[in-house]
Length: 553
Ligand SMILES: Cc1ncc(C[n+]2csc(CCOP(=O)(O)OP(=O)(O)O)c2C)c(N)n1
Ligand SMILES: [Mg+2]
Image 1: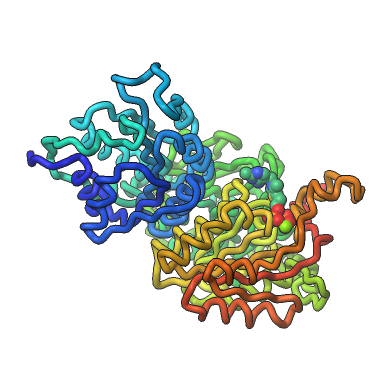
Image 2: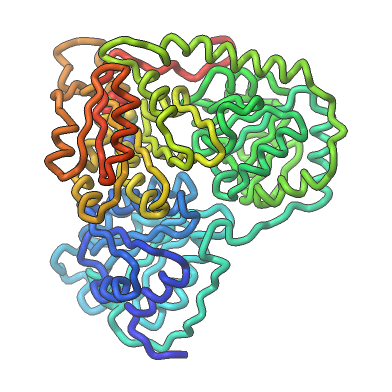
């Protein structure tokens, strides 16, 4: 046991667990902020609590380590609101807030409302730290919960509105368990019998398909996934969180499946006689509300969380284990006694070719104002070898599914799980986690407006992200609600704002692309700018993405 201040203990823990940044709106644990700076770690002050969470989330998804964020009591509800996305995407975010003190609660303390229950629905572990002596064990428990099993957010509420309970001196055991510093904390293997059952089911299948989800990315299992698919001759569709785990140009790649999807993936998954779900919770987005594949399809499901196994599709074989470990176990089984499946692979590659041909006129479009598919084509071409693409939700997710092409295993995609505006702050967090990798955010203008003030944060901390704005001066995905009636135009149409000028005013580099041939050069110039840069791309507000294909459509 050593005597330390709670603040110093927290800073030591962050250092030990590899948490290099703390995204927050002051005032929260000011003593700990000083202790972080003294250790060379970086408190990042943002312009809003939701942005702080999204930065921590982007940081966690790219680093695989815990992303940390915080707010004082009056900002705690805003911070909780931001946790929806990391909760849905199984991202290990640690949220720290100030909260009520025993001596003043129920007396109308300035700004005080009970925020603690708000965290119950969006965390794996939610704890009140009433006494400084409890800091060590509860902080360590928070890291344990965040990184083990299926990862997810955790929340600690330190008493006093700015969490000042951490300033007290405590007796602490300076042991930090490095096991819980990153996801996955444990590489849990599957039972041998289950592996054998998977091998047998695969051998019997004529038209198998893999649906790979975010769990494959969290498990860092892309290489094993591709080797497995090749060895067993199985085409691979991905969920949106799984985008990038197999390059889109791989002969077995089908593209994104489900709601924001490509026709080739949905067709293949619906034609399959066996679907192998790996690291995906088989939710509504990935399965187009359980139509893709249709009910009754034979399913093998591999997931680290046993509660997911069979949740939406009864499993022919249920396998509990870490994705990479299970894939290694399957690969260790030697050459599969599977049929060559030449006909099936021929059919699925025809699905892919047909889809690509259908999209070609839009991808190569010369139209002005521009098509978003053309923007995605040129963004894909400009994405550097080690680039990280960060996509927003809504139409941006549809364009990411249908237009973004990941050509290299070294590239990475992360995306909003559903909260509009997530992508830009998440890109800042991603860049903090991987300062040497180019980070390109793709967002609609509606998404960008949410946290546009964070341009100042990116400039202040010299975080050179590139933000590509699909600027159609509207909430275009919602336009259909108003049936083209001009009386409702203000419900979805915005003023024509020049985001390049806005960016310059913040001290960023600003670029504008109004014609197709300007897109790729401006994105490349933005990547070379050496400071945060915005590329304002003027697109057609009549462009609507193709809805996800379902049988009979
Ligand atoms: C927090 C939140 N509120 C509302 C929505 C619903 N929503 C999804 S897309 C969208 C419009 C997006 O506009 P923009 O980012 O400009 O993209 P566009 O559709 O114009 O391409 C809205 C309001 C959401 N996903 N998240
Ligand atoms: Mg828009």
